[in-house]
Length: 322
Image (cartoon, rainbow, N blue to C red; front, side, top):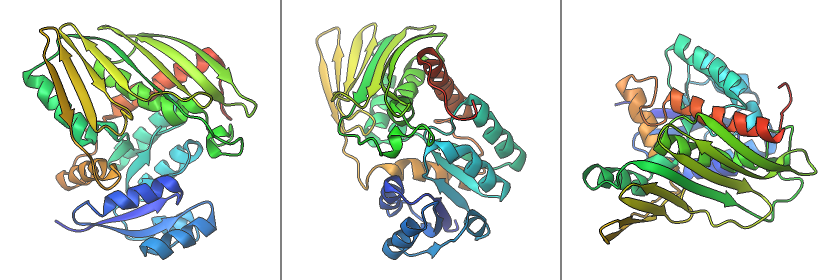
């Protein structure tokens, strides 16, 4: 097994967490980085080593095997397509694109190039989440009929990138995409959606609530920047329910309550920031010759961003070019 050589696009806070996780990924190393902000690249390579590239083209011309895209959503499709066309496998931060139309363009190129593209949706790879799914195979809570989750944070300044319409910010894109994952993972593709939202002074949603109807049940979710939400998740079945305690998207602890009175607590801490688990999965897929994850499949990504598209349409949130 050869060493997996990584390049990084975007050197902000998320990329530092990726590097923390990379220390726990066997046979992987960081080789080169580029960012739209040159100063951040210089600082990044001073901390982690590697080559500071002056352009995207310079990065894609290096001998890296895979590219991790850690930029804001406005550029995910452009950089993903460029990396794939350069012959690199791509692990792209969530949401994988601005909308479903752009995602389809990425997936078309990935298929043509016969390369792996995966959205970096981390929760299902955490030890707690995997332990929970494994437990339910032998001790289920029955048919899942309801999922409730959400998160809202405060203290986001008006000049923060998440508040920028141009950079495809807003709470739905930054936080709500996690709720979209939870809905699709437990209930399947939604067949109808209801939503309400508040558009802030910068043009992005600062609070949104949405309900989803699926063939097997319903979901209720919230996301925002104006109130301090709890950040837990509730999953209800016909003979039991699960609480994934906050923060559910970085899961450490869950409680399963059964109709017969049993209560089971699961505890499974994560290490190295948590990005290491999805990165290990991604590398294993490359080594096996796979071009699609069975966990965060292309259809999973389609269903997640389609859900967010529909919520945005309901609250009147559009981004440039739409």
